Image (cartoon, rainbow, N blue to C red; front, side, top):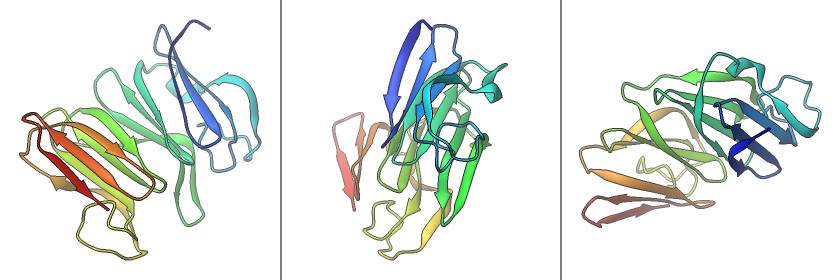
Length: 174
């Protein structure tokens, strides 16, 4: 395998080769490797069959989840979703605009669209998804949290999130 990019989650890794095919290995108990193998660990890199005809340009590993962006900016996801709901084969997540970046916290995710908007979903216990609430209820569908702010970069920690716009204004929450 001629590796172009590697990223890691908590106990799994994701690779992209020079032609945009995706390989994963590591702990797969939640399906975070994108391979439906009854949750068994994957000891060596295995190609994800789902992406056979899809060129992946970027990958991101979260705690127990994986995200994949194709060359058109479409987003795919596998792994832990919420409360015993596991996605073992990558699923497409629909957005109106191409996705250019992703950031993963412990159990929350941010995505940055081509036009600089930010969406968030996941656990909101510490306010880390920016919806103005601090409770243990998880938001399962992406919600627009920063609109028309010209965001160029996003980042997540375990229980917090950041977004930086093009003029250097830093937004933080959680």
